[in-house]
Image (cartoon, rainbow, N blue to C red):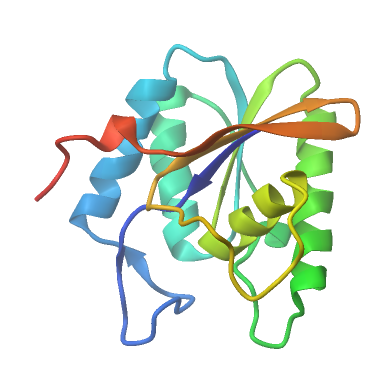
Length: 166
């Protein structure tokens, strides 16, 4: 399972607003990521329904030719939601995606806290208000599943973004 944080955002006044879209750099980042992933056989791209994630997924799909599927379990955390609730929904989404594409690779485009929660779970870290790692826009993290367990193969790899700036 390839986890991707959405591209860089033009904020509408509130960081993390539902209508926030990608800025110019945020549109270039998934193109660079798609070039990197082009040698892989991506079966599907799953995305949070929030605009910035969905747009990132659409750009990836244009280059990779994989279908895009929205999954509300990949949404960013809601202020009224506990960390445990985020963990449970993100884990359920990951399990279903992996089960649906056994022996294949799939991409999940989501948000920093949701992806961090998944990674933290598989690293065996306790749930808390923050994680000891950061995830960059269009950073690539990879979970390799074997049965019901997973290992974190890659964490926030941004090599595909080197030299990309406005």
